[in-house]
Amino acid sequence: MLTMNMKISFIILLFASCFISAQEFEQKNLFHLKNEFSSSLNSESNSILPQFFESKKKNTGLAIIYSLLLPGMGELYAESYESGKYFTIAEGVLWGSYLGINTYGNWQKERYKSFAASKGGVNLEGKDDEYFATIGEYLSIEQYNNQKALERNFGEMLNENKYYWKWTSEDRKTYRSMWVSSEQAFNSLRFVVGALIINRIASAVNAVRLVSKYNKQQSEEIGWIISAGIDNSINIPNHITINFQTSF
Image 1 (cartoon, one colour):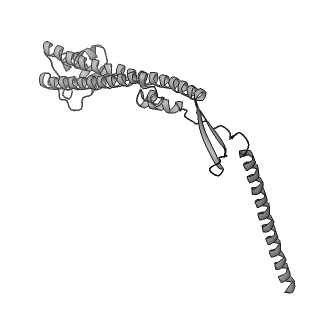
Image 2 (cartoon, one colour; image 1 turned 135 degrees about the horizontal axis):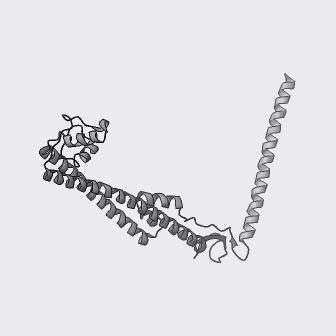
Image 3 (cartoon, rainbow, N blue to C red; image 1 turned 135 degrees about the vertical axis):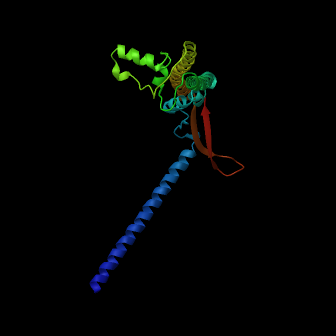
């Protein structure tokens, strides 16, 4: 039992001595570092710390995303909206054109369907766009089926009860004019969509160029320098001064 107590006491003393030695070592190192820092700051000129450059660079990926979402926003992100505003204006004009053309096309579509029902005897239920294109080319379903029979395209013949229509010559021309007008409007939408895509791509390319230009200017012109030193004044105690300098 005595031997065990002696072992425990020895271990406690060993840890205590190690802890005291570590504290003494840390205090000596702190005192040494304090003396070195004080001596460096007491030199005739302020000690210049490493330079720190303020990060103001723009991300080209973000510029592309902004331009694809709304043309001109990539240029705004690059702080050069002077050229970007034209892409935004073009976007507004194109969307206005899209909505206007789409509204006109749907209006004409409703017109020719109503005309087909009232003047051609068409039952509108269950009819697709191909059917409405077909009835503008023939005076009646009878004429259409006869033509398909002559061509031996029997599979394309239509049920006369379900797909009935019959025009006068003048009514068919009127219907055809409305149908063509609607189709031309919807075809024009493809060009508007293409222009919207091109506008976005052009804005993205321009935004990348402007971001690269901006980042290059930041790398060349802007930097931050931090300096520290001791101010030896007669009237007040010595104190540390830290200066921030910007280079342009």
